[in-house]
Amino acid sequence: MTSSEDLPFSLEVVAVPADDLRVDRGEIARDYDRAASDFHRLLDSAGVADLHRRCAGTRWTNQELLFHMRFGYMIVLRRLVLVRVISRLPAPVGRGFARLLNATPLFDVVNYLGSAGGGRVFDRNRLGRKFDRVVAALQRRLDREAEPNFGRGMPYPTRWDPFFTEYMTVEDIYRYPGRPFDFHRNQLTLG
Image 1 (cartoon, rainbow, N blue to C red):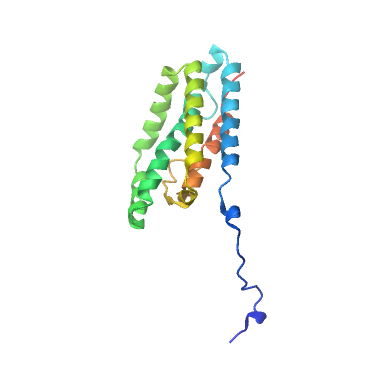
Image 2 (image 1 turned 45 degrees about the horizontal axis):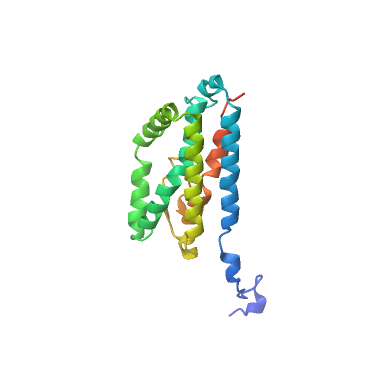
């Protein structure tokens, strides 16, 4: 039998203070504020011709892509509900749900058409107001979120979005929208 002194690593248990386990809500809220400021700067600097120009790497116009960028924040509210429900079910149900969603090709069509339609319906003023409302709603929810809920999670359909991981927690969902926002920001062809 080997003693713990002979091991190349320590078996010592280190206690982590409870404060170190807390989610940095301020960091998440600041990222929401950063995106909202950037979104308004983009809207304010874009002319009519800019908004109707095709963006790089998609079939959307800049206005349609801006709608899609706002939609990424809006859908977080729905995903939070979904993860609360799925995380309470037996693990095989969550894995099966993710597999089913991965196998659904309809998502790509709905994603494209939803943003194409939304970009035509929402002008720059409505887009800006809607973005502010959804960010405010997310921040209110973030402030009220019980700390233990941040660790709840579920399997996710990774085929849908390169920013999804195979398993996402409530914290991951709150942190999610800034990554696709920044990615799509680089596809805009404004100015």
